[in-house]
Image (cartoon, rainbow, N blue to C red):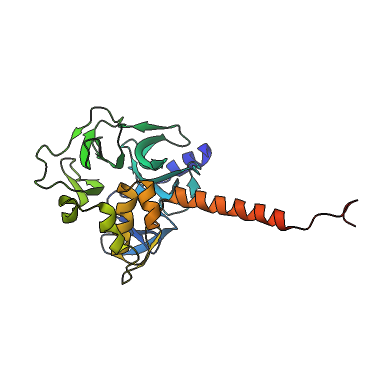
Length: 291
């Protein structure tokens, strides 16, 4: 893998700002300023070009992967069967990647030194951290619930010295904050945020989520979220995302909403139960063995 990484790094860099990566049809598409679209990678989400434009980091089936800028040479950085990983962002030197990992149902930010590790947690607290973004000047931004609600923090690249990015919080607290992106000059942050009036009036979150689950209308189908690969509508997606982010397991199980790790565990348990049942129902071998 070290040789493969070194060979990829030797590729002639492409213009850094000449194209962007978007999720489309369950894969990653490169789009140039004139609108030309080229499909790069299938079955992938959350892609990001390296600073020199020669590599692409992306998430696939809960693991982090890397490929050459044209989509060739795809290889998984590490297999993490009990941990879901997504949202890779490159450090300015191109030698490490920060990303979000879901460990035992809780999100945390980790940094992976290329090409093979190690990986370690950064910006840790007793709450959750996620949606890391790195500026060109080397500032780390992320969302944390350490204050009780989602707040954007800025820190050094090692996660130390975290302070709230917005010194003047909004008049109404957001209940959902995600998808951070730095401005080119590193002075501003764009992000997606959501607010529930019901929560402000203390309506239980499960009661707000339940009506949205399973609602069917266009658009629907596959998503680029590894936790929620397929939905019946945008409302269905937001309801499931809210449940995964904010409800404890018992309430989610009652609603039939599970994380990727939980679904894999359920499938493994079901397969094991089927195998045991098949063994019990199999006729005993005759004495002396089969002939």
